[in-house]
Image 1 (tube, rainbow, N blue to C red):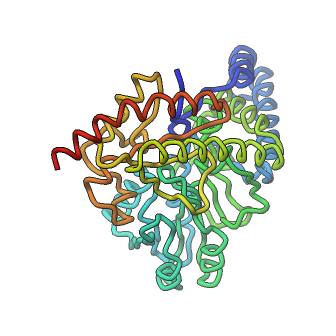
Image 2 (cartoon, rainbow, N blue to C red):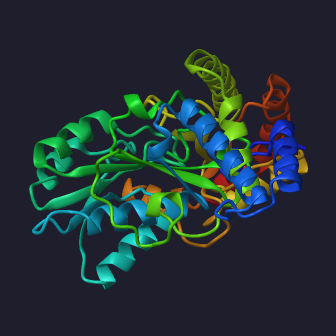
Length: 384
């Protein structure tokens, strides 16, 4: 099988599986217990936190372990909003956030919170002119993803951070798609809070993190003694060990950049080859700064399911967008926010490469897919 759905999830590495199995076998005790096995688990947790913090460029005390990015996002927005000064009760989200984050926004609205929306331009980039007008002294928090999970377009975090600082607001970013694909260090990051999930960079599912700057006013919506009172619940130690191992395997910025260039080269070859064979091809986000392995495209108006079925015949696993919302009859909310017509949005297919993708994978798609799609395109043109 050729796996081209790395934005949805990645396979846990062998080192991650080994580390998790060892932690599960040797450190199964509760890290909050005072007896010897519990204290051994506590030391293992502290070691994993130190290992993860070193890879993330943060202080160990700034790292909160969670069940994944969805929970991290909830903690960040609700916790920082609760700690905001009186008179600052407004939260801004971009229109192209992950669907789970948009569900949080709707929940806040239902609870009486003032919520606003940062629009994107037709190319998928954030509309900074609109953001400048919307980020004002009434805003407590701006929540903006670092990179879009569908188009791969990178968001202007530094510019938005400057706007939030000027307005006295905070910036939270969902870095789920960024981390593991591009260099990241919290000590160099413009955001005040950062969410991420381990399964996007060859770690386990069900574990992630929230980075919070020291000194922020944060009132946890999940109270408890664990994680310095910021996230209650017994720590999932094997998963945390897996997360720390996966982070340590990413390497330094040079290694991450080298892998990003390799994936971008493969992505460009894939897009150029398909464009030569299929003139009806359109790629969203092309020409903008975007994730190195993400290609979000349509082939004429061929339905996404039709293209995915042909890819499956070639042994290729791909998706029509975000894994949590693909396969439905509704167009992508990301493309809708960009103003893409419905019939074009319903043709959207996402091919996302990863560190196990090869030139042979790309060549297999280029050699097989155009021949399977060309007759369908001719038939569609004849009908029109």
